Image 1 (tube, rainbow, N blue to C red):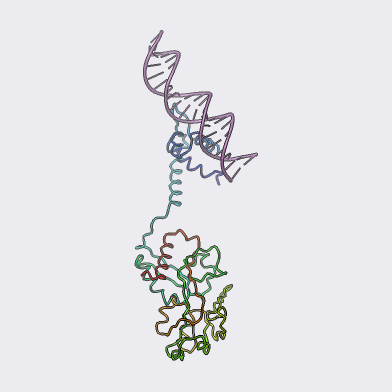
Image 2: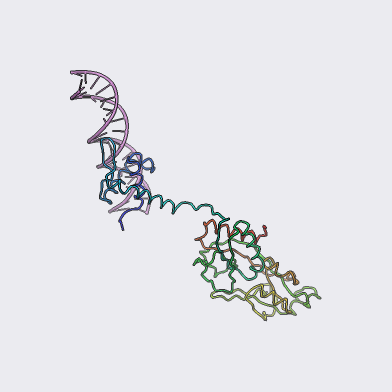
Length: 300
DNA sequence: ATTCCTACCGACTGCTGTCT
DNA sequence: AGACAGCAGTCGGTAGGAAT
Protein backbone atom coordinates (compact mmCIF):
# COMPACT_ATOMS: atom_id res chain seq x y z
CA UNK A 1 0.00 0.00 0.00
CA UNK A 2 1.33 3.39 -1.01
CA UNK A 3 2.15 5.43 2.09
CA UNK A 4 0.32 8.53 0.96
CA UNK A 5 -2.20 10.96 2.30
CA UNK A 6 -5.07 10.33 -0.10
CA UNK A 7 -6.04 14.00 0.06
CA UNK A 8 -2.96 14.49 -2.07
CA UNK A 9 -4.59 12.43 -4.79
CA UNK A 10 -7.13 15.22 -5.37
CA UNK A 11 -4.34 17.79 -5.41
CA UNK A 12 -2.34 15.66 -7.84
CA UNK A 13 -5.32 15.43 -10.15
CA UNK A 14 -5.76 19.22 -10.24
CA UNK A 15 -2.05 19.79 -10.73
CA UNK A 16 -1.85 17.34 -13.59
CA UNK A 17 -4.97 18.76 -15.18
CA UNK A 18 -3.93 22.39 -14.95
CA UNK A 19 -0.16 21.96 -15.28
CA UNK A 20 -0.03 25.28 -13.49
CA UNK A 21 0.41 25.72 -9.75
CA UNK A 22 -1.42 29.03 -9.52
CA UNK A 23 -4.51 27.84 -11.40
CA UNK A 24 -4.45 24.56 -9.49
CA UNK A 25 -4.34 26.50 -6.24
CA UNK A 26 -7.29 28.67 -7.32
CA UNK A 27 -9.25 25.62 -8.34
CA UNK A 28 -8.56 23.93 -5.02
CA UNK A 29 -9.34 27.05 -3.02
CA UNK A 30 -5.90 27.18 -1.46
CA UNK A 31 -2.92 29.50 -1.64
CA UNK A 32 -0.22 29.11 -4.22
CA UNK A 33 2.30 28.39 -1.52
CA UNK A 34 0.13 25.64 -0.09
CA UNK A 35 -0.22 24.09 -3.52
CA UNK A 36 3.50 24.34 -4.05
CA UNK A 37 4.04 22.52 -0.76
CA UNK A 38 1.56 19.88 -1.77
CA UNK A 39 3.49 19.41 -4.99
CA UNK A 40 6.69 19.05 -2.99
CA UNK A 41 5.08 16.34 -0.87
CA UNK A 42 3.82 14.58 -3.97
CA UNK A 43 7.29 14.72 -5.50
CA UNK A 44 8.70 13.05 -2.40
CA UNK A 45 6.00 10.38 -2.17
CA UNK A 46 6.03 9.54 -5.89
CA UNK A 47 9.76 10.06 -6.36
CA UNK A 48 9.22 12.10 -9.51
CA UNK A 49 9.29 15.87 -10.16
CA UNK A 50 5.84 15.58 -11.81
CA UNK A 51 5.87 19.18 -13.06
CA UNK A 52 9.03 20.86 -14.31
CA UNK A 53 9.68 24.29 -15.66
CA UNK A 54 9.83 24.73 -19.41
CA UNK A 55 10.65 28.32 -20.03
CA UNK A 56 7.97 30.33 -18.34
CA UNK A 57 5.53 27.48 -17.89
CA UNK A 58 5.39 24.09 -16.25
CA UNK A 59 5.11 20.83 -18.17
CA UNK A 60 4.31 17.29 -17.09
CA UNK A 61 7.10 14.78 -16.81
CA UNK A 62 6.61 11.54 -18.79
CA UNK A 63 5.67 9.77 -15.55
CA UNK A 64 3.10 12.46 -14.67
CA UNK A 65 1.65 12.31 -18.18
CA UNK A 66 1.40 8.52 -17.95
CA UNK A 67 -0.45 8.46 -14.62
CA UNK A 68 -2.71 11.43 -15.33
CA UNK A 69 -5.58 9.52 -17.07
CA UNK A 70 -5.69 6.94 -14.28
CA UNK A 71 -5.61 9.57 -11.55
CA UNK A 72 -8.45 11.46 -13.20
CA UNK A 73 -10.45 8.24 -13.54
CA UNK A 74 -9.79 7.38 -9.91
CA UNK A 75 -11.00 10.78 -8.71
CA UNK A 76 -14.16 10.44 -10.80
CA UNK A 77 -14.83 7.03 -9.26
CA UNK A 78 -14.28 8.40 -5.75
CA UNK A 79 -16.65 11.30 -6.43
CA UNK A 80 -19.21 8.78 -7.69
CA UNK A 81 -18.93 6.77 -4.46
CA UNK A 82 -19.48 9.76 -2.19
CA UNK A 83 -21.93 11.80 -4.18
CA UNK A 84 -25.39 12.41 -2.76
CA UNK A 85 -27.66 9.48 -3.61
CA UNK A 86 -29.97 10.10 -6.51
CA UNK A 87 -33.69 10.31 -5.96
CA UNK A 88 -34.73 6.67 -6.29
CA UNK A 89 -36.91 5.55 -9.16
CA UNK A 90 -39.83 4.14 -7.20
CA UNK A 91 -41.59 2.90 -10.32
CA UNK A 92 -38.65 0.58 -10.98
CA UNK A 93 -37.99 -0.20 -7.31
CA UNK A 94 -38.10 -3.96 -6.82
CA UNK A 95 -37.33 -4.54 -3.17
CA UNK A 96 -38.71 -6.44 -0.23
CA UNK A 97 -39.19 -4.42 2.93
CA UNK A 98 -39.14 -6.22 6.25
CA UNK A 99 -41.04 -4.77 9.16
CA UNK A 100 -41.24 -6.29 12.60
CA UNK A 101 -44.56 -5.64 14.24
CA UNK A 102 -47.17 -7.44 16.26
CA UNK A 103 -49.57 -9.82 14.55
CA UNK A 104 -52.23 -7.27 15.41
CA UNK A 105 -50.55 -4.65 13.26
CA UNK A 106 -50.19 -7.11 10.40
CA UNK A 107 -53.87 -8.02 10.50
CA UNK A 108 -55.07 -4.49 11.16
CA UNK A 109 -52.81 -2.41 8.90
CA UNK A 110 -50.66 -4.73 6.80
CA UNK A 111 -52.86 -4.58 3.71
CA UNK A 112 -53.20 -0.81 4.00
CA UNK A 113 -49.45 -0.41 4.28
CA UNK A 114 -48.74 -2.51 1.21
CA UNK A 115 -51.38 -0.59 -0.76
CA UNK A 116 -49.85 2.71 0.31
CA UNK A 117 -46.35 1.54 -0.67
CA UNK A 118 -47.56 0.33 -4.06
CA UNK A 119 -49.09 3.70 -4.86
CA UNK A 120 -45.52 4.89 -5.33
CA UNK A 121 -43.64 1.66 -5.96
CA UNK A 122 -45.79 -0.98 -7.68
CA UNK A 123 -43.10 -3.68 -7.62
CA UNK A 124 -42.19 -3.68 -3.93
CA UNK A 125 -43.12 -6.45 -1.53
CA UNK A 126 -43.68 -6.33 2.19
CA UNK A 127 -42.71 -8.88 4.79
CA UNK A 128 -44.07 -8.41 8.29
CA UNK A 129 -42.17 -10.38 10.90
CA UNK A 130 -44.24 -11.06 13.98
CA UNK A 131 -43.02 -10.25 17.45
CA UNK A 132 -42.96 -13.94 18.26
CA UNK A 133 -40.11 -14.56 15.81
CA UNK A 134 -36.70 -14.09 17.29
CA UNK A 135 -35.15 -11.11 15.52
CA UNK A 136 -33.56 -9.59 18.57
CA UNK A 137 -30.78 -7.80 16.70
CA UNK A 138 -32.53 -7.62 13.36
CA UNK A 139 -32.32 -3.84 13.02
CA UNK A 140 -28.67 -3.78 13.98
CA UNK A 141 -27.80 -6.59 11.61
CA UNK A 142 -29.80 -5.15 8.73
CA UNK A 143 -32.27 -8.05 8.65
CA UNK A 144 -35.08 -5.63 9.43
CA UNK A 145 -35.84 -2.29 7.82
CA UNK A 146 -37.97 -1.04 10.70
CA UNK A 147 -39.86 -2.15 13.76
CA UNK A 148 -43.04 -1.01 15.43
CA UNK A 149 -42.75 -1.31 19.17
CA UNK A 150 -43.49 0.21 22.52
CA UNK A 151 -40.20 1.71 23.64
CA UNK A 152 -39.03 0.20 26.89
CA UNK A 153 -35.85 0.00 28.92
CA UNK A 154 -34.88 -2.94 26.73
CA UNK A 155 -35.01 -0.88 23.54
CA UNK A 156 -31.49 -0.34 22.29
CA UNK A 157 -30.48 3.27 22.89
CA UNK A 158 -28.74 3.72 19.55
CA UNK A 159 -31.92 3.10 17.56
CA UNK A 160 -33.69 6.04 15.95
CA UNK A 161 -37.36 6.33 16.78
CA UNK A 162 -40.44 8.32 15.97
CA UNK A 163 -43.74 8.21 17.81
CA UNK A 164 -46.42 6.73 15.57
CA UNK A 165 -49.42 7.15 17.83
CA UNK A 166 -50.53 6.99 21.45
CA UNK A 167 -53.19 4.39 21.98
CA UNK A 168 -55.77 4.20 24.72
CA UNK A 169 -56.71 0.81 26.11
CA UNK A 170 -60.21 -0.58 25.64
CA UNK A 171 -61.94 -3.72 26.86
CA UNK A 172 -63.13 -6.32 24.39
CA UNK A 173 -65.62 -9.15 24.86
CA UNK A 174 -67.67 -11.34 22.55
CA UNK A 175 -71.16 -10.14 21.63
CA UNK A 176 -72.60 -13.04 23.64
CA UNK A 177 -70.69 -12.12 26.77
CA UNK A 178 -72.87 -11.73 29.93
CA UNK A 179 -71.34 -8.28 30.36
CA UNK A 180 -73.45 -7.20 27.41
CA UNK A 181 -76.49 -7.42 29.75
CA UNK A 182 -74.84 -5.30 32.43
CA UNK A 183 -73.40 -1.86 32.65
CA UNK A 184 -69.61 -1.76 32.42
CA UNK A 185 -68.50 -0.90 35.92
CA UNK A 186 -65.41 -1.86 37.86
CA UNK A 187 -67.53 -4.03 40.13
CA UNK A 188 -69.08 -5.92 37.20
CA UNK A 189 -65.72 -6.35 35.48
CA UNK A 190 -64.34 -7.98 38.61
CA UNK A 191 -66.78 -10.84 38.18
CA UNK A 192 -64.97 -12.00 35.04
CA UNK A 193 -61.54 -13.15 34.12
CA UNK A 194 -58.97 -11.54 31.87
CA UNK A 195 -56.60 -12.50 29.12
CA UNK A 196 -53.16 -11.04 29.57
CA UNK A 197 -50.49 -10.15 27.06
CA UNK A 198 -47.12 -11.57 27.87
CA UNK A 199 -44.17 -11.21 25.53
CA UNK A 200 -41.18 -12.78 27.02
CA UNK A 201 -38.58 -12.57 24.33
CA UNK A 202 -35.05 -12.78 25.68
CA UNK A 203 -34.54 -9.74 27.82
CA UNK A 204 -38.00 -8.44 27.17
CA UNK A 205 -40.94 -8.43 29.53
CA UNK A 206 -44.10 -6.47 29.01
CA UNK A 207 -46.48 -6.31 31.89
CA UNK A 208 -49.87 -7.94 31.16
CA UNK A 209 -52.14 -5.14 29.98
CA UNK A 210 -54.97 -6.17 32.30
CA UNK A 211 -52.91 -5.37 35.36
CA UNK A 212 -54.61 -2.46 37.09
CA UNK A 213 -52.63 -2.26 40.28
CA UNK A 214 -51.71 1.31 39.46
CA UNK A 215 -55.33 2.39 39.82
CA UNK A 216 -55.64 0.77 43.19
CA UNK A 217 -58.29 -1.64 41.99
CA UNK A 218 -57.74 -5.30 42.79
CA UNK A 219 -58.26 -7.45 39.73
CA UNK A 220 -57.68 -11.17 39.60
CA UNK A 221 -54.52 -12.11 37.69
CA UNK A 222 -54.97 -13.02 34.05
CA UNK A 223 -55.98 -16.64 33.69
CA UNK A 224 -54.46 -16.87 30.25
CA UNK A 225 -51.43 -15.22 28.77
CA UNK A 226 -50.94 -14.85 25.04
CA UNK A 227 -48.20 -13.17 23.07
CA UNK A 228 -50.20 -10.67 21.06
CA UNK A 229 -53.26 -8.46 20.95
CA UNK A 230 -54.82 -10.28 18.01
CA UNK A 231 -54.62 -13.61 19.82
CA UNK A 232 -56.22 -12.05 22.90
CA UNK A 233 -59.07 -10.70 20.77
CA UNK A 234 -59.55 -14.03 19.01
CA UNK A 235 -59.79 -15.84 22.34
CA UNK A 236 -62.14 -13.22 23.76
CA UNK A 237 -64.37 -13.79 20.74
CA UNK A 238 -64.71 -17.48 21.65
CA UNK A 239 -64.93 -17.23 25.43
CA UNK A 240 -66.12 -15.16 28.36
CA UNK A 241 -62.65 -13.80 28.94
CA UNK A 242 -62.07 -10.05 28.74
CA UNK A 243 -59.21 -8.73 26.67
CA UNK A 244 -57.76 -5.28 27.26
CA UNK A 245 -56.12 -4.05 24.10
CA UNK A 246 -54.94 -0.80 22.50
CA UNK A 247 -57.86 0.81 20.64
CA UNK A 248 -56.36 2.16 17.40
CA UNK A 249 -53.94 -0.69 16.98
CA UNK A 250 -56.75 -3.24 16.94
CA UNK A 251 -59.59 -1.22 15.40
CA UNK A 252 -60.23 -3.61 12.51
CA UNK A 253 -59.79 -6.71 14.64
CA UNK A 254 -62.53 -5.65 17.09
CA UNK A 255 -65.25 -4.97 14.52
CA UNK A 256 -67.20 -8.15 15.26
CA UNK A 257 -66.84 -7.84 19.02
CA UNK A 258 -68.14 -5.54 21.74
CA UNK A 259 -65.65 -2.93 22.80
CA UNK A 260 -66.04 -0.69 25.81
CA UNK A 261 -64.24 2.13 27.52
CA UNK A 262 -62.58 0.97 30.73
CA UNK A 263 -64.24 2.32 33.87
CA UNK A 264 -60.89 2.81 35.56
CA UNK A 265 -57.73 4.67 34.61
CA UNK A 266 -55.54 2.46 32.45
CA UNK A 267 -52.21 3.48 31.07
CA UNK A 268 -52.15 3.67 27.27
CA UNK A 269 -49.38 2.56 24.99
CA UNK A 270 -47.08 4.71 22.87
CA UNK A 271 -46.25 2.89 19.67
CA UNK A 272 -43.06 4.03 18.00
CA UNK A 273 -41.31 3.28 14.78
CA UNK A 274 -37.72 2.15 15.29
CA UNK A 275 -34.92 2.00 12.76
CA UNK A 276 -31.16 1.78 12.77
CA UNK A 277 -29.16 5.03 12.40
CA UNK A 278 -27.42 3.44 9.42
CA UNK A 279 -30.57 3.84 7.34
CA UNK A 280 -31.52 7.26 8.71
CA UNK A 281 -30.56 9.17 5.55
CA UNK A 282 -31.37 6.49 3.00
CA UNK A 283 -34.07 7.93 0.70
CA UNK A 284 -35.76 4.58 0.10
CA UNK A 285 -35.88 3.78 3.82
CA UNK A 286 -37.14 7.29 4.56
CA UNK A 287 -39.96 6.73 2.11
CA UNK A 288 -40.79 3.35 3.69
CA UNK A 289 -40.97 4.93 7.14
CA UNK A 290 -43.15 7.74 5.80
CA UNK A 291 -45.56 5.15 4.35
CA UNK A 292 -45.81 3.47 7.77
CA UNK A 293 -46.37 6.83 9.43
CA UNK A 294 -49.15 7.77 7.01
CA UNK A 295 -50.95 4.44 7.45
CA UNK A 296 -50.71 4.56 11.23
CA UNK A 297 -52.00 8.13 11.32
CA UNK A 298 -54.79 7.36 8.89
CA UNK A 299 -53.58 9.81 6.24
CA UNK A 300 -54.89 7.59 3.49
C1' DA B 1 20.01 42.78 -34.90
C1' DT B 2 21.56 42.97 -30.33
C1' DT B 3 21.65 44.46 -25.62
C1' DC B 4 19.81 46.48 -21.56
C1' DC B 5 16.23 47.81 -18.54
C1' DT B 6 11.83 47.30 -16.53
C1' DA B 7 7.46 45.21 -15.54
C1' DC B 8 5.03 41.19 -14.88
C1' DC B 9 4.17 36.37 -13.84
C1' DG B 10 4.80 32.01 -11.62
C1' DA B 11 7.21 29.14 -8.34
C1' DC B 12 9.63 28.69 -4.22
C1' DT B 13 10.79 29.49 0.68
C1' DG B 14 11.35 31.50 5.48
C1' DC B 15 8.62 32.93 9.07
C1' DT B 16 4.64 32.66 11.75
C1' DG B 17 0.15 31.23 13.52
C1' DT B 18 -3.30 27.58 14.12
C1' DC B 19 -4.74 23.14 15.09
C1' DT B 20 -4.43 18.43 16.70
C1' DA C 1 5.90 18.63 18.64
C1' DG C 2 4.52 18.12 14.09
C1' DA C 3 1.59 19.14 10.15
C1' DC C 4 -0.39 22.51 7.57
C1' DA C 5 -1.54 26.98 5.49
C1' DG C 6 -1.05 32.10 4.76
C1' DC C 7 1.86 36.18 4.21
C1' DA C 8 5.59 38.37 2.31
C1' DG C 9 9.80 38.34 0.09
C1' DT C 10 13.00 36.27 -3.33
C1' DC C 11 14.30 34.25 -7.60
C1' DG C 12 14.09 33.11 -12.39
C1' DG C 13 11.90 33.44 -16.92
C1' DT C 14 9.40 36.14 -20.40
C1' DA C 15 7.85 40.06 -22.99
C1' DG C 16 8.12 44.58 -24.60
C1' DG C 17 10.22 48.99 -25.27
C1' DA C 18 14.26 51.88 -25.76
C1' DA C 19 18.99 52.52 -26.84
C1' DT C 20 22.86 51.25 -29.46
